[in-house]
Length: 537
Image (cartoon, rainbow, N blue to C red; front, side, top):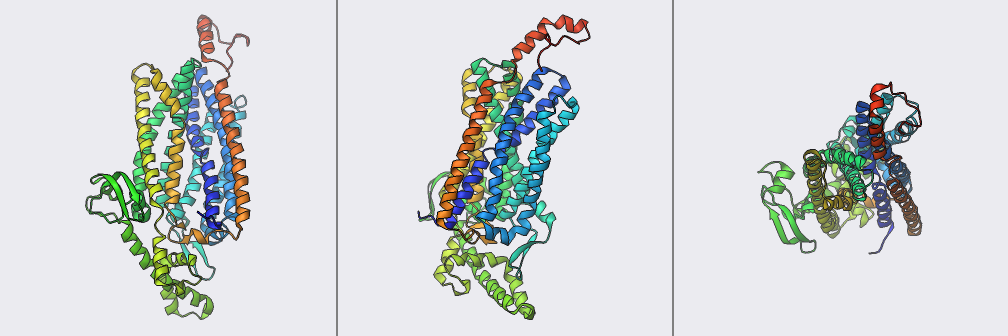
């Protein structure tokens, strides 16, 4: 494949986004788990829970710093690599991005600092409030990013201004409460909770296999399994909501996920396995579950799900409508205040399809001069490459059900079997540590690759969104980013492994032994023991 400016810009942003998303899910989930552990500490006053809070909080801090560092680069890329996109939709996209920046770099960072440096300077309750504010701030930071991304998937609360040649916000309320953005937020955050739960479970299992920090590991497994089971179940439920929203707002993405070439009679089946063949427009060796896709995608037994071929035909109609809008737009800009009401009405009637006319810019400078073959080519361009989306979605779903099974098992063993975990199960937990990141990356791939050829669905094609850069410039910056992010990733892994191997600052067995040795004294004295005899907190 020959890489041009568009392909290299997409590759660069995909690389930085997927690197960044290695840190985000763990930050979201660990912030909540750490706050839960500190809540138990404040309620029970047991040193083991403070020890757990500090240990897992340290790993959260390492991950948080790397996440912020990689996120800054992404925001700069909008102006560097996607300048026309920033110009065209900046009025809408910029608002949630700015709010996220304020929350991440001011509010959230302030509370993170108080969390780490406030242990001896704040009361227990005040520090607990800070821990929950860190968790809430981290999750709300993700909310604003996903509102921005959700608008790209389903643009609402905005309209095109023919005088400025830009999209302008008409309702911040609609942007904020965009149904796609809200569904993406709860689904993504729940996936982060699963990621952190699997991470805590796996590290704790490793400690138990090594015979180290057993009490910390057991309690951590109990918290992680309970929280992880609830989160894994919610991911499935909320993923179903995302699928339903995709049926309503991104029909082509859903058809590509299913490799559904022809419109299926209602209720449509779910293709469990198959080999999509985009050239032949069929899926070989398909194994289907009757009715499943119809129930998931439409929540009914009577509504059909449109196939790819039908959606291509619809795109062709919208391209022709968009050409009429483009013609009216050119005339309005030439005449300006002398534009007739009839001309403006013509534009308004077809303005929703203007973005489809822009698809022709790949083949001809003036969409009005497009040939029939070029219109057909542009219509076919609305179909993303099917097979990677098809398989990425299925691997993601398979991993999701694997998390439910794993968390159910550990929750059962922790709750009803006295926390006696067989060694094979502990080994499985360790092996599973990377899998939630794989699932999260696959989910983002399906969401973003499935939206192509659009940067903003139905509004702005990706091919028109890039900056006027050269291939050499992009190659050099791409290599630079790869090198820089690889170094950051190695640093992250090195620090994480170092502190996991080091473990908490004091073995829990030492704390328990000290409690046993001084149990009588603790009952008969006021508890003001000499420093040398008291356990380190």
